[in-house]
Length: 339
Ligand code: NAD
Ligand code: TDX
Image 1 (tube, rainbow, N blue to C red):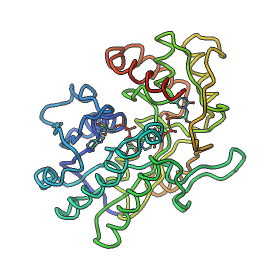
Image 2: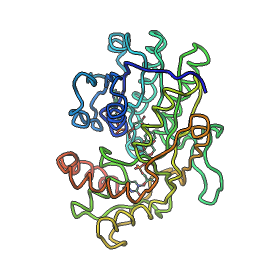
Image 3: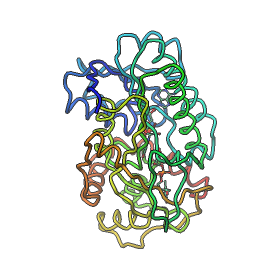
Image 4: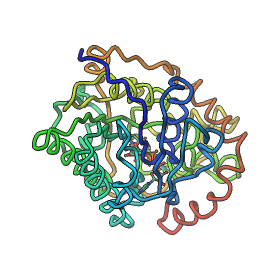
């Protein structure tokens, strides 16, 4: 293990989104001596409410776009690390309209690594297991750091592009960087466009949940707090230039997850609609996190999916003011797509 990096003043891009805001909460709860500057454009997916109670001496908010090189020139100097979460993150949106994904995920990452290089700031790039494409349901293999890149969707191909840019900046310019590729997250503050929150909030509103295709696609679920602890571990202890996969052995097919949600919410297991499949729908994701566990000693703590799911359901039940304002428009968009 290399010497620990002790950050004091970090920029978190996308810190008003689902995973970024959970990371800001994680830092505040676990590292009160670290100052956090959240840089977020507040797109449809960003909500300042996610971090509002944290704003003050430790957490500062800057409303801006990661593609804005001039803003980065003003903001980055004086910080010692950038933890880069900001992205267009939803596959279905990328299929309907890929352009914003190119802009934010590729150009935005380029602007950030240029600023990190210019001001010699450490860079942690948050990415996804989707860069590896998919696995067959009966394949005993899981993704490792050695799996070749084979992205399927406009979203995952832009994330793959951004990973390759960050790697090239390490090799060519010696950018002090690490990359993590994580599996599907669940937990509080996730936008209602995503699978688990969409179904929970549908049930609350009396709308039948919607399952794509045959429902047998497998995702490898991890609680977002475990993702945060893994990113912190990699930022502070990871070896420069390295990629670490993050996952918590949470493979489940979508039908099983939906039945879990229905059961937890007291509904019959068949109270949902089958809808048309996502074009190019990845069949299965599965992460082998041996490198992160053995080299850096990281372990997940939310290992009971059912109890994590119950807590997540409760969060959406308790916080209708958070999701109700965007629910109708999200469902209208899906309806227009036949989903
Ligand atoms: P999200 O869509 O909930 O949040 C994205 C945030 O980025 C929002 O606050 C948005 O306002 C901000 N943003 C978007 N474009 C921006 C721009 N140009 N400039 C500044 N801010 C901008 O996404 P998420 O689900 O929290 O994902 C965060 C990161 O984690 C992404 O990089 C994603 O690829 C990665 N990831 C997500 C998952 C998952 O399961 N959701 C899994 C693995 C990796
Ligand atoms: O209504 C739905 N019905 C359904 O069956 C929705 C919204 C999704 N699905 C399926 C599609 C996927 O197989 O559920 C699965 C999960 O879908 P999403 O929540 O859209 O996630 P996914 O496409 O797997 O990507 C997520 O994990 C990896 C994140 O959105 C990405 O940002 C991350 O990189």
